[in-house]
Image (cartoon, rainbow, N blue to C red; front, side):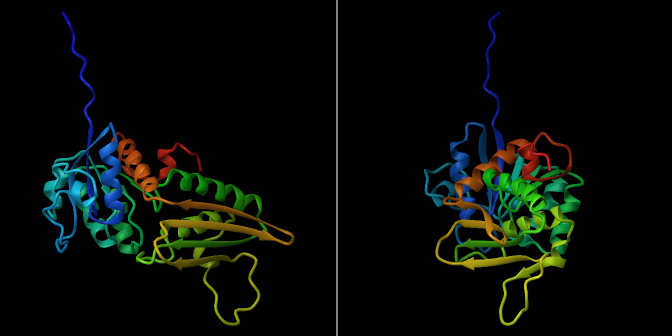
Length: 276
């Protein structure tokens, strides 16, 4: 008796914060994926684009998915959620995702302590990939920074990040993760050694200090440089993002990965199977 081979079902995803810059990049990249099917797109109730097709919003063809503020209805139709919205919205989304048992990928930065704790509580019930930067290259840089900060233990560390003028949080979540990684590699807590910019007569630089400097200008997608310097030499590790597609593709890869995981909080290093 002949058998019919059916192609595997595509993973149904919803994008939260779909009308934003990253949301639009996610829509474009998801539309090109052979493994993903975008079936939900959520925005805030005050968004003027509600009811419009998100394919048109993202600059591609009509894809039959309308932008909505009804997150519960959108969540019920999908397998996995990808959130690049705002901190308070992400916390609400996480609580609803935990209630509905929907795996989640979070790229939102700038969350406060209470919002962060909400994510952690949600991860006790669902698998969550949470990373300040979804770029595959940047996550390899995190691993390199950990190794370098430990190997060059007496070198000064300075971090310079540049983003577009519209970015709301400063310093970037990525810069903070780089700084946290470097501090931990040397046995410090970041709060004890961080210096956010310098002005006036601040005295000689403490050896253990980690400088973090934020630049906001133009339409820069995201540049991060971590500098290790000592007498006679310096080493600079730099990641430059020229398109948001690199973040979107990483987030979508995480969406495919997280669906099969047990409840817990995961990073992009887990997705890439990089051992810390």
